[in-house]
Amino acid sequence: MKKTNGTTGKDIAHSLVKGGLGAIPVIGSLAAEVFGLLVTPPLDKRRAEWMNEVALKLKDLEERKEIDFEELQNNDQFIDVVLQATSYALKTSESEKIKAFQNAIMNTAVGDTPGETISQIFLNQLDSFTVWHIKILKFIDDPRMWFQKNKKTPPSFLMGSLSNFLFEAYPELKDQNDMVGLIWNDLKIAGFHATGDLNTIMTEDGALGGRTTSLGKKFLYYISSYQNQTPNT
Image 1 (cartoon, rainbow, N blue to C red):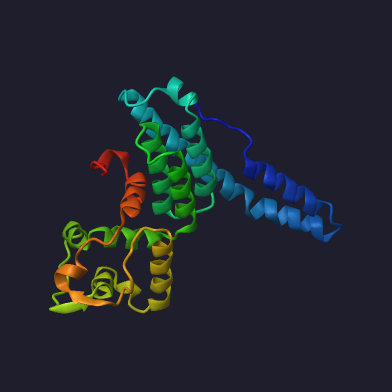
Image 2 (cartoon, rainbow, N blue to C red; image 1 turned 60 degrees about the horizontal axis):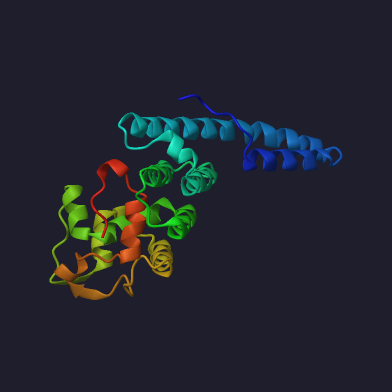
């Protein structure tokens, strides 16, 4: 696939900012030079890497007859998702979030989406989330399965809390209670889980049970690899 070089909203924004800074005597010209030196090269690199990776994945789908480029050109929802995901992906260096945005594009390309409005909401949420939001959401979707997949043994409690299992899965979070609390609240506000306090005492079976809502499962499905999907109900 040929690489496409076009002017994006970020290019225009950069030009406007640089032009505005350049109009300010002395300090403005220096600021514009520093801005161009520090921001433009990495942004160009991110854009090139993003476009190449997305193009290769789409080409792979096309070669396997899962998508048709001519049809996608006339698919407004697909174009919307590509533009929205691209603008968000260029703002982060986190590989897990970048892959999630790519997965959303691929799932949209093959027609596996939760609908136009929900897709936009999910992309907005993904943009606002940190990698830890995603990791914690994946964990609470099925804690028991998480331990199995990661070849770890969950702690054994007669009575315990979900936080006990979360900190066993991610020991680096043990001293980050405030951060975990904020993330937990964010996921609840987004409608991705309906559990109250992360520290509520319950049985071991209860703590290892799934916590995501139907909406949370749809979100995880949408940002997961189209090659490893299981039917979403």
